[in-house]
Amino acid sequence: MLKGLALTPPVLGRISIGKVIEKNGKRLPEKDDQFTLTSQIQSRDGWLLHPLNEELRQGKEDKLRSIPIRLMFNEPELNFRADYTLFDRQTGRPLCIGNGETCKRVTQDGMQSLPCPSPDTCPLAKGGACKPYGRLNVVIGDEDPLGSFVFRTTGFNSIRTLTARLHYFQAISGNRLACLPLELRLRGKSTRQSHGTPIFYVDLTLRSGMGMEEALLSAKQLDATRLAAGFDQAALDATASQGLGNGAFEDSEEDGGAVIEEFYPVTAEPSSPQEPSSGLPQAVRSSLADKLEAQALKQFEDNTAPQ
Image (cartoon, rainbow, N blue to C red; front, side):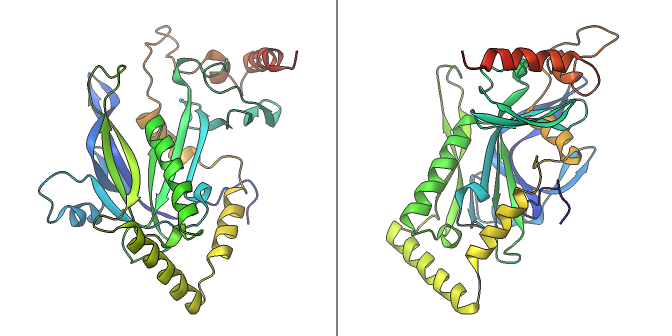
């Protein structure tokens, strides 16, 4: 196993509730009110649709707002990983991930473990450079039980709801989360900040048409069938945990560019014609090139040191 390489669940495609469009010469994210399943191939016109996208829409008169799924693991944190994450918008390289208490950050002295005060008070998080960032892997269909579709989000409502649901379902199923017949469901809400405009987020529910008792019985039966066939769920969870912990960051530079374009768009105008802004604080843009990051880190450590 290559050290420093995070082994993530194999991905067959993407689940999105938006897309990137070109507007006034800029590529900007645009939210949608339905799910779209895409492949991992991107053309000049966007991500190519996955064949399951059309298959799931058959028989639906309305938009695709629910997807029947199963999970790969019994541990919620293996199915859904969420962190405060900061990317270098110019290179797509992850620079820092944290949980609100501690973080792992790339510095000119290498990888360091530092306090994480959350984006609200971190000096490197200005301008929306650092956000809560979640990745949910789910299984769609029965063709490949170890191949997944990934749903990425920086939405607080989706992250909070998915985290709660996963832990609740794990508890009531007797740690049979991977055996439950579940469904991703798109929901909407309005807030004062949205000025009445619906905000769509992703929820995780029991599959449509199934009651709680029926779903739990189905999970218990599937678990027993898998055990009889020699399927070792505990070993799978342990292997996945080891693989995810093998690297400092889950996202590679290869995927980082697409993540930044969709979830970390640059909203500020360039600071000058000669030096386009990357949307990050100057200390981050120069983090691996000059002394500005060292100055920001010193300021951060001084501000967060115990008094």
